[in-house]
Image 1: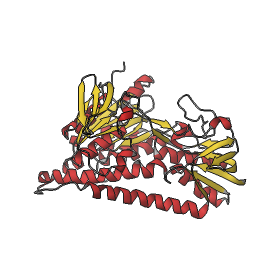
Image 2: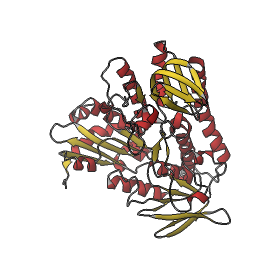
Image 3: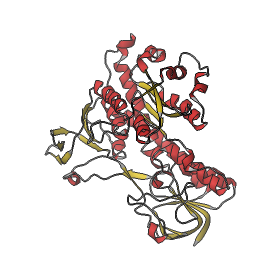
Image 4: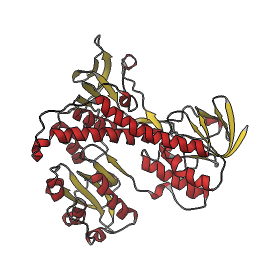
Length: 453
């Protein structure tokens, strides 16, 4: 049996983060991967979806051409070429990562599982690791609607394998994955209907932010049905798919289900190594990503501490810090993420309802994107900037930048929060004109108290 200093199970973005440093230390390393190298981000998440969204935005701007004085007589979506571009970009990323692994480590394609706390089995082979890293990510939760077993439903992987543009895309789930695909396919000329069980889309957000998102999508003729309890799904003789909910039935050509994610831990045989996990299967870790077994770490989505590429990368940094006796912790990071509809919604820290739930005294400031010169110049005026400030010490506790450029602008607020700066420091900062970011210092002039109930 071959022995290694480190075995890494999974090749998501934390693997790329830690591998370079481990190689510098001349560690003997084995990497195990059961699917495409690169994990969800490169293959079924960030890279392909944002590539698809870019094509969809191109179509949208052609459609809007006359608003800018550009007359386009006709255009159409060549979906085969759209997907060719998507696949070219994601395949190149996967190819490069695979080549790096094969050149630098012992690479084992196949499903890895624990035999004991130091031994991993892969396709009949056993290897030993002094230290083991689990980085297996998550997968789409399988729906349990009656009739689902007879319907060719799609998850975020399946929809990126389509060869033809859906004529009518039905989406169960009005959260981040559902909304991004909804807008992209609508702009590519699919009819789209979203079913969301809660009263609001992206229901973890503040209600007015949710309503802005709904308005943006409905303005693009996306049908959104909220408080929709799906009773069953079925397939008709012509292969059309029907979603039956308490308010009626809607029939379409394709069904995307985006109702959450579950950890890729069920096939690891964690019990053989004594690794603890919660009821949902997320691996229990401490603030350094260490599991209940001291020499085994779990990084990325599988530990339930984050669900994004950037949190996986930070987990990798925390892991390297732990190995070197450093002080980085998972709890150091402030939650931040973006929803890449157009315009994007970017968030950092607490929402207003979270501040209320935690009884944190706060002030709130808002600014409509319709008052931002840069947004008006680009004729992209939908959205709102919203910032929360701790009433007792003037530090920022949360922000939402919903509008053009928000996914980039949020970084300056995240940096200020990480550094513990008072909001007055941002007010004193000079930022180039004309940008969206230049308005952030001026947003604070509208700080006021909201009734906290």
